[in-house]
Image (tube, rainbow, N blue to C red):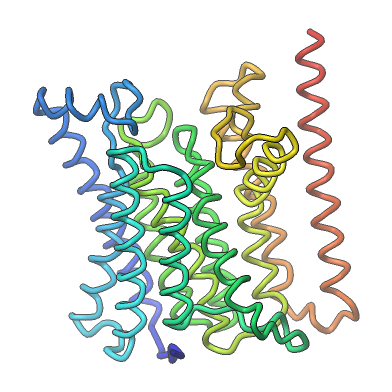
Length: 358
């Protein structure tokens, strides 16, 4: 299925952003007040795997996802968005709804990792055959039968990457918010209407929740939020490919703006495999954990990661301008990013070694 593109005015982008922001903020506040207003509910929820015994309201993903979907369909029914977008919105709602249910189930029962991965792959397959596909890389490489494998890898990989960085208050929603703003800038510059619109709404939904998730958090996303949010980010980045935008930058920019969760997940899986343990086993060696071990407060730790992420977001915007006029720009730019990643890893390791010696 190909999703056609239809014009959306600037006022609609702003309306979508502020409606999603207001809904997310209000629904999150209501959820916190409701949970804290009933002692027996607080008692029960604090004993779920998601809470780990902490006095914090779980299921923060509910207001975030609801605000996104409500805004989407509200603008459609009010006629502010072209009614022909209904196919796109339906597929998104289906995928997000399924991942949302998986997240709730995992938060309540602590779903086995293999079962969770299997369900994620099934959801990714449904979305692949619904139109979210990586068919080729640039205008040269046709993926053929490898298309479904790479698409599933991207969808499941980004979904879990966002899930894994949701281990420190404020980190996951902050990374998603800044990444969405970057994607909005890039897509609007290239007149990729629907993807920019979805990113705007997701930015508003995430920011409304972010205020309550800053350290010390009053509410946490849980898998109820991190899994469908990761899925949404992956689908937004795949939408331009479905609509015929196949320049290399549309593959490169999402990787760069999501480089922190991608690197963190890649290193986590590699680390566990090299140690001969199950790659799905949890550990405390993620970027935010390592910064915490250096004695940094959660606020300082996420500030450092936000600064690094913002730097990557800025570099992601570089190819938007007529850089294709520069010969061999993409290979040169890719090497530049790799070097930057290597430098950041080197700096982090030096800081850790210095701290250990002290």
